[in-house]
Image 1 (cartoon, rainbow, N blue to C red):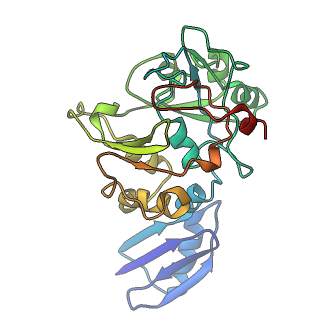
Image 2 (cartoon, rainbow, N blue to C red):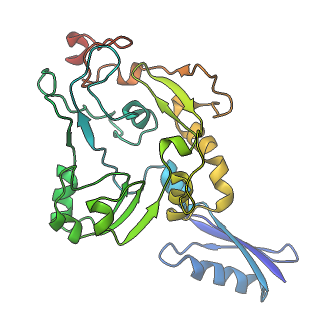
Length: 287
């Protein structure tokens, strides 16, 4: 006897083998309780239970998940191709809302209009450190970052449970309770948004070592997304992010596609003028 269950944020639906449907209030603290109640209501004792949930997906789309901190990396640019912003996808993080707030994206770090000094300086985790010290953060998921190099101390890491996703061993992976080896940029396909707000795709170039996993798959599992939804992540993002409406990975041309940079035009990006980028005038930044 087979029964299907779908756990939503408000209601849980259970469908019996004969097509009967029970709709019961969801129990977020224990989703299984609502499923059990629904099974009892349809009056069956299933041999097989198919269970899905949209709770994690909705939380991601509605940005009700954990706070995201982006490590800032600044160094000296060459005015041609080397950017003073050493993060490869800062604008991509802005476009999808990974960084920013309802009131608009935050101002990015800038050294009072001066060119950053060599070597590359990492920063941006002071608020996270304060939250850890205050006991407001219990778990930190690091996506390829050595948190000690970015400003957290060993004492900070000792106060939280660290889950590390990355490609190289470092002080953070050594302190982590869970280490999940993931792929380098050469071992996977994906997209990034460059200085001009041109979204471009890159393709897997070499096979990945045995035992490693794509970051997307790992994050989907951590978020308890049903396995079948992984392929639909781009569709979910496109439905939520105005700049990416009706856009798919397959439809991106090889030359990329320009996105409308207007929502972020007034941000004080750390870069100076380069071969393919001209900062907004000071009057726009101060408006």
